[in-house]
Length: 213
Image (cartoon, rainbow, N blue to C red; front, side):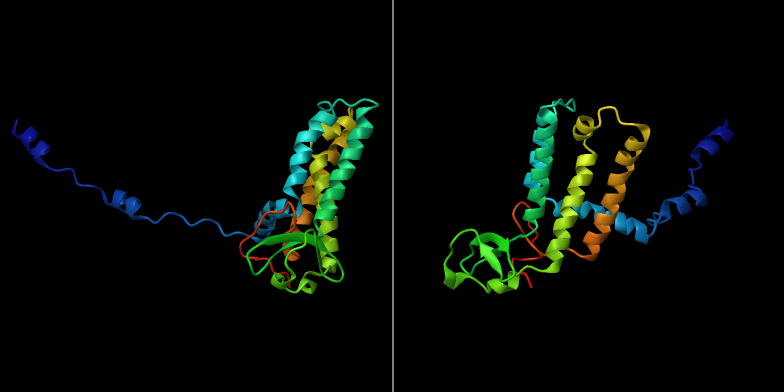
């Protein structure tokens, strides 16, 4: 009886192994290599495409393709729709915006001489429009936006089903693999040559401001 009382009165002492485990710091995350940083840049692909064009593509493609089942009438209409959306991506790359001294924001098209505004603001409040002139990077971004839009269209089941209702195995492999390669290459080019314009339909970034150098 006394042995039971003595054993019950002895407090439970934590083991040293539990203390070591509880005091051990959490493991550090693995370092990011160059490939993971490049793949992270694919998130910026949305900056290459106008949001309005993507919304129109997502809404109109199922309607024009009849859910991916095109006929002799809807197939040409779908082709015209895709060409118009690709042209919209191309032209939107040449748009930019500026903020006047009075705080108003105005949009326009970049030309060789400067920014051609869509409206007629007060000329006294405008900055130097020649700083927004067209350059070679605008052409690169415009071509990249068309390529990225083509990759997005190739990943859409309605668009693919409209033009390739019974695609062969080789064609299906190209449709599955090509958009991934295009997206990776475009993301790398976008990281190397970032766009500094804030055009129509593009996300607004706070760190860029509205002055294009």
